[in-house]
Structure formats: C-alpha cells, structure tokens
Image 1: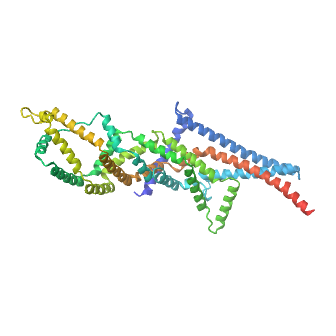
Image 2: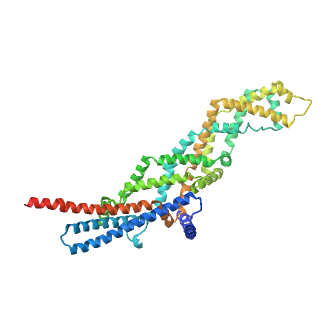
Image 3: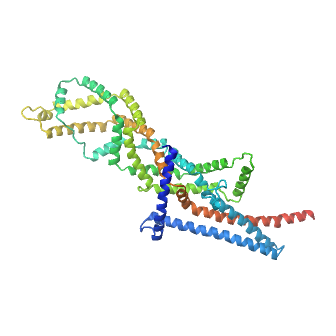
Length: 497
C-alpha cells in the first residue's frame, strides 16, 4: 500500500469517527461540560466569545445594509443635501468593507455558497496536505530540531544522574557466583599486567561481536519503565515554548505568510492574475487582509498550543511516549539503527583501551585476597565458602571500585562521552520518528475536523477583523466625502474664480 493510499485510509476512518464524535458532541454540549474541567470551561468561554463576536459582525453588516438603503432613499427625497450624500458615502464604503472582510474570512475555511469552482476559496481544506507538511516540518526543523535536541541532551550529565540514582539505592547490589572462586585462585598467580592486556583484547573482540542494537533497545525500555519520561518531555516543551514566545518566531510566521501570498499572487500575464492582484491590493488598502494580524493570530495560537502541551495528559505527549517505547523495539529490528550502532561500536573497539580499568580492578581484587580479612574469609581451608561471605566480599569490591570511579573525573568524562555519542547516533537515526508522530496525529483529522479545530481557535479574531473592516470602511467613506466636498471642490471653485 502506497503512502497516499495509507493517508486516504486514515482519512476515511477519521470521517467515520467524526460522525460519531459529532453525535457525541451534540449530547456533550446539551449536557454541559464536566464539572471541574478547566479545559472544558475555557473551551466553552471561547465558543461563547466567538459566537458573540460573530453576532456583532453580522449585526454591523445588517446595519450598514439598512443604512445604505436608507441613505439612498434620503438622497432621492432630499437631493443635493450634503448630509444625505455623506451618509451614502459612509454606508457604501462601510458595506463594501464589511462584505470584503466577510468574503476574505469565509474563503479561508470554505467556498462561499458551496461554489467550489471559484478559485482560491476554501484555502485550508484545499491545502490540507500542505498545512500538515508545514506543521511537520516546523516541528522537525524548528521546535524539535536535531541541533536543539542534541544541545538539550548535551546539557544532561548522564553519569552524574547514574551516580545519584545508584547512591539513592543505598549502594550497588552484589553480584557473586562460584566461578569467582576459580578467578581468585588465578589472580594469586597471574601476571596482572599481562592478564589485563589479554582481557582487554577479549573485551574488544566481544564488543565487536556483541549485538548492541538489541541491548540499546532493552536499555531504553528499562529507562522508560524506571524514569519519569513525561518530566523530560515537559522540559523540552518548556524550552520550545520559550522559543515560540520570541519575536523572531512571529517574524518567521509573518515571512512565511508573505512568501505564500507572493507566490499565490505572482503575475503570469493573464487577466485573472492581474485582477487577483488588484483585488488583493484593494483588500490590503481597506485592511480586509492584514498579514501582520494573521501572523499575530497564528503566533498566539501556536503559543496557546504550546501551553496546552504543558499538560502531561495531552494526546501528543502520550503518543510521543508511546513512540519512544516503539523506538526501543525499533532499535532491536531496524537495519539502519543496527548499522549506525555497529559503526560506532567498531570505532570504540579500535580507539578505547580497557586495559587500565581492568588492571585497576584486578589489583584491587588481588589486594583484597592478600589482606588478613580477605584470607580469613576466602583462604580458610578448614571450612567451605558460604554464599554470604562471597556476597560480602563482592560488596566491598564493588563499593571500592564504585568510589574510585566517582572520584575519577577522567573516567567519568570518558563514560559520559561514550553515552553522549550513543545518544547522538540514536537521535540521528530516530529523529524522523518525531515527524511520523506529528503526521500520524494530523492525518487523523479530516478536512472538516481540521477546519473546525482551526476555526474555533481563531473565530473571535476573525470576527473582530470583520468589525474592523466595517468601521474602517465607513470611516474611509466619510473621509473621502469630506476631502472631495470640503477640500477639493472649494479648491477647484477658487482656482476657477
């Protein structure tokens, strides 16, 4: 099944869900929002505000239409009266502005009177795929870009967090087995330097053969089970919200709208394109279309969306956490991830020497074997070794090396570098999953559902634009009359005299 067929399948399924949601939504609105639901109350207030602004905009259009008809009648009854002409100029310009803004607001979401043959109407439904692609690109390349995620991950001190986590568990659990008994006997007679070199070679070879991709997936699964992933996601979203609130982001949105407008209005030599450009210029002159206001509106809505994402229960955050779980499984099966980790593993096996760490470990173990306390527990031939004694000895050994590791900043830096490189490679191979999550969420919205979602968010602002268009149009009409009859005509008469 092709990518397009998959999207069509998702949309058909979403349309069925929309019909069910509409029936449930009608019952929901009739019953009222659940008590104590802040999101439901805010949504209700926003809907009520939008309806109020729409009534005011419609009322202004009706009043201007009545005023236009009345002023035309008055001009017939009282021809030549300046106040009748002023009233007609004002009503006529205000009505044109109100109708132009009504058309501009309507064509964003639907075709007027269902006439889809009119070009450049129903802009959002017609450009649904472009809108989805733009949002996905914005999330991938700006909000959660690779460089941003890499920089945020670089701020995390993974080794320090691991040390704090281990210390919070009151020490490391002891690992012991009967095989250590043979290893201890060998350590008494072995050349520790030569043994460390041999173990280093075996460790490198084992590292080359080890399937780290599967283990990295297991490690990620373990981290997801034992850590608050939503807290990390919340920190990332908080940073993204700070970036979104900056003026440069609003400017970027305005530039994007300007580029799209220039692209749509590009003159190709035809009458239609010239007429379209002229109408757009007139609309800008009458403030029927204001890209800066549109950019402000989109910027506010994006900030509101980022504020909504601060809630851990937001569907996108829940889906992102689920995608991390999917990524853990993906690391075990993905050929690309396996290849990237394999290359990094081979480089590590060639460049990193484990011999100093192994030698230090062997020397510590040998020192414990030769100490009186160690002999008393380990070299007593009159009684058998007890599991408790082995466990106690291993506890002291691990704690000694753990304390040495915590005091060795160089070793911590090496391990930190190792972990950061691992995360960077995982990010490089798995970053596309972010875009897939966002696209998967947006593909579930049909055209009608997407239009309804956006229209609900911006409806009060759009209706305010209609009101402003009516008021500014009426003011412009009155000003034109005053300039013509109060300045221009007297000036002509004076020059003629």
